[in-house]
Length: 503
Length: 124
Image (cartoon, rainbow over all chains, first blue to last red; front, side, top):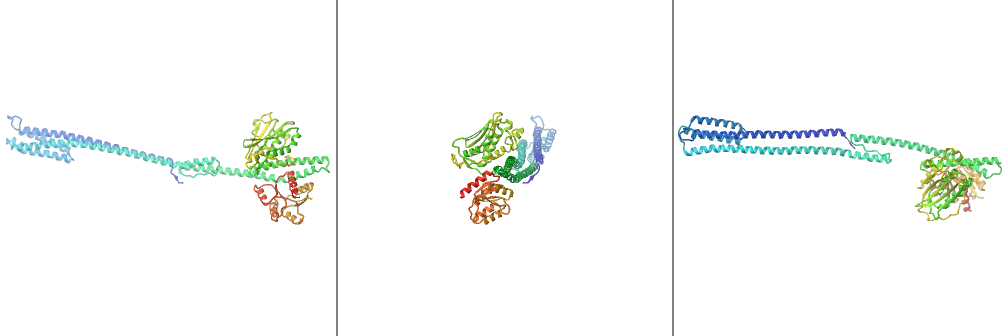
């Protein structure tokens, strides 16, 4: 994806362009309106003056008429008065000519007025002053021509004023519309600019949000496409750098973890063969006691027992290393519960008898089969029972019970020993953790039993838990799924004898 | 007397197995790798062992390869494999090749003896 110019730069340019557009539109509009107003006022003044001058022309003509033909019979026409009135007519005509300058209609009307007055003076006023009475039709015709021309000029002047007002009104309206349209256009352009900016951010931001979610969800290969405005693109690059670093760290961690697992797997595996041999021969010696004196027999027994403990520890470590590497393999198959519980009970009984502990196995009637690797579940039960045997005092009571809980079978191992503090319960399934370090010597063991039990139960799709209160004993429970392929109720197969238990 | 052919590449383990099985009253023939195990089988000729115990991992020829050859030759002698299960698919492969039983390593002595007793009793 393309990297666009910086957001701030684009915003800045956008604002500047918008501001300039608004300024230009506003100034042009206001200037134009002002101009229209000034023109209108000039026109109105001019036409008004023209009307005044038209009135002057009329009154001057009336004075001329009065001079040429006095109102009373004993008065004589006066050349001097006529000349004075004609001069004032001519003055007014001169001023009016200045005012009509540029307007052909008004100039023509004014021209007609002055021409008709001049013609009247020649044909009517001059003869009257020289006491020659003009023909009656001539005087009347000439006089009304002047009067009509004067009225025509006045009417034209009024009409010019009106049309100037209309013109100003139209201009004002058009200019206002233009300015409004310009402002609206500028705002629209701003809106398009901003929505464009927002759109250019939306897609890359969405990708970042999506990428962050995937990364948080654990997909460390997540990278985002870098794009959008410079700032968002920088964020995208920073995100990718962070993801790179996270992935590198995770890979390094995995590598170290893998090395550790491989080491434990290899070491345990290599240790196992010699320990098996030592244990095997020592057991052989104790089994055939003939030829050994009592001290030799005792030594052989200790060797066998210690080798057994060592073997158990190595096997536990190997199981955990396999579990960590995801290589711990179970083969679950429909397994009847009662024989499994009874077999482990038989195996463990000697240990309880050795501490005068009462040990009971109770299995609910008609339990369906569970999905279990019998050997592995026996291992889990042996670990739990070994703990109960070790931590409960002589003469204590230990119970192994199996019952149905919903769609699962629950196994419970309980004792009435010293129990565990709440704080201790949180740690019981951790590796190498033991109830009390001062007791390590007396109870022995590796501290791996419960960790393995947890791994194995979880591998079966079950769950394990511990409950206890100090002085009130402890109960360890785990559940296994009921087998879907299994028979609904168990049948007891021929019991197979097994001796010896995990050391 | 019940005859057993036992093959394991560790000489100490092999000796331990031999002595303990002899103690239980079996006649034991040993081999330290797959090639030797097959040689022993052809040597005894008509006097075939009643059961073969094979370590899965051995040099020259692995237990799994020996199993394949024995079954390929049409023999139905019970073969018990001892496997460390380092590969999760291994047991399935051995079963498909015709292993009579598989004992996971590490094994409890009682499990091994029980299995051998069971299988040799069936055979005779």
